[in-house]
Length: 74
Length: 350
Image 1 (cartoon, chains in turn blue, cyan):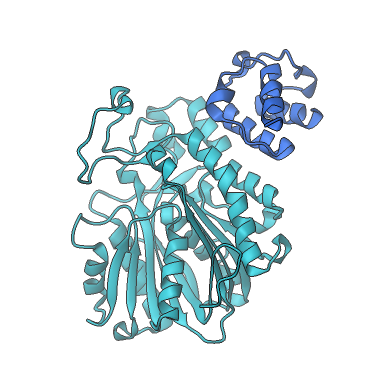
Image 2 (spheres, rainbow over the protein chains, first blue to last red):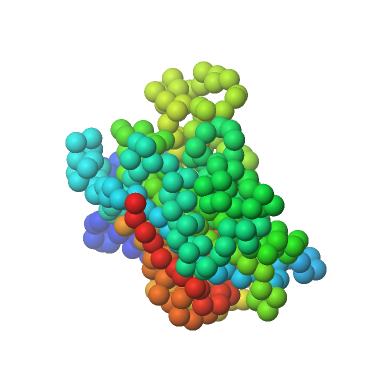
């Protein structure tokens, strides 16, 4: 997941060390721009296309990781 | 046309692009203009993500047809094309002069074209230039000798000035491209497609003949006379559809990403274009982006790249172009073409 964390650090403009599973998204400007950036990031590093509306409901990085796992398992 | 293969799309032989001229309205609008309506953070977000820093907007008495007419006149002059030598005029736009007659017929009259010249409108937007090239090429393969393809939009007339998602995004432009029968031209390869399930994610509901039913968007304040865009849905569609479109078109042409001299994408969103280029394996240096200067000009974005960023090279040497238009519809079109040096590629303002 390191590529994901590095990408999320860029999206949220924070140090990569701050990104972990508990990272709280609504506390870090989890707006439409951040969401589409994250869709593109996951497309790039995981080759998966997540649903934007579902992604918007994520509260933490762990929620995103769970969505990725669910998408990967079909 | 060549034999249809198992690969999706079509290939047309014997067609050359001779020149491209674009016309921009003189009024240049920078992001400073929006400070009265939006916060600095809102504007900075748009610059960071979408990349638009300036755009050109028409005055109230200017239309897409005016821009295309000026571009067409300059193009015909540069090519020394006599009006009676043109067999067809195609006007691709979602901002025609009126509901009827077709704006192409008006333009036919303004340009003094022959009574034997066909003229018709095509109501396409983001994918419109690819569709126009396809139609013009297919018509030449069927016997036309010279086709004028006029494509453009004045989307500034349709956006809600208080909608952060669209107000800063669009610019206005018109274009004219000249296509001609040329037996020794390299084949042009096309892949075209549609997903009507996305039709309501990018639309202007008013102006047609379907009665406007109350819906949740209007309850939320959407004016059916303004452009509505579900940016997230359109973004997801684009990321899913466009890399596949580029791969399919290259596959049709028997080409690879390394063969492309320029990947010319519909200028919708800088972040998205960079992502698509990376996804299909084309160096950003070969993916020109001018959305910072002109915004999203709908069906004019691709010819505007040809007539600005690529103009000098297109008039100097042959180029292998991979062009892709995508968006409203949803509709998409990919075109792979090897150009011969163009007689002209330029932009004028009026």
